Length: 258
Figure 1 (cartoon, helix red, strand yellow):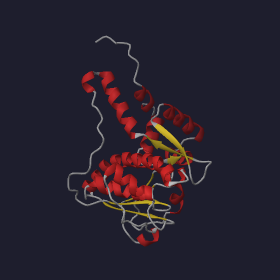
Figure 2 (tube, helix red, strand yellow; figure 1 turned 180 degrees about the vertical axis):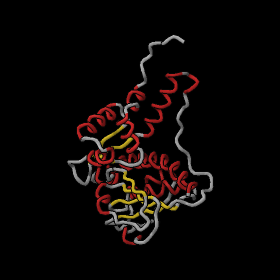
Figure 3 (cartoon, one colour; figure 1 turned 90 degrees about the horizontal axis):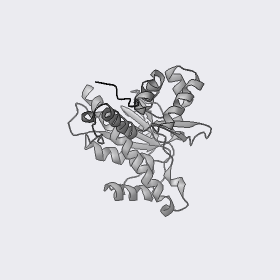
Figure 4 (spheres, helix red, strand yellow; figure 1 turned 120 degrees about the horizontal axis):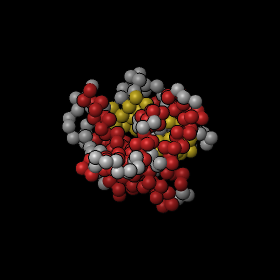
């Protein structure tokens, strides 16, 4: 077959570089700051920053300013965009190789052992209860999930209750925030922080769970009134839902290997 002169797909050019592939592999599991990525890939900071800039320009990686230290940024891998980029790459080689990416589905098979997941944020009134509710919903009873905060609020934010009801049909009106201290001694396979501040103060757990960070801004700070902040709650819930759906296959595989 004669060479058609078709340009190499952008995803192939980006992912084929060994360091960029390593960065993608690190960011697939958790959000990290530059200095943490430098340590994990054992490469100079200027080189890591250069390749992160290329990944950001492609849209595969996004950066978000840390709410704990404004001088820092967290980097996040957009898995949905990666899925579509891989589908486009297959189609570029041959039309029959285009596999339209579908969102990961809920866990349907009964796992050998139900994985235990803890979501944490500061107030346990918005981000972490949204994540708890969505994982419980999508996990279909196959996941043990709870949430807690380092400085829990007296009650859930009204927009947390509203957004889960309106977007997903989930009722959490009776739920109350809980303190991280109430979970001392509990066993978790995964501890996922959704707040840059709580990541710095999260207690250690005896079973050494897998620590994951999702750097997500607090939607409650985006407006002076509940009505004004509600659009931010919708964006936050949508982002958390995407991350939850991509977490499910990881949990399913871990449970089957247990």
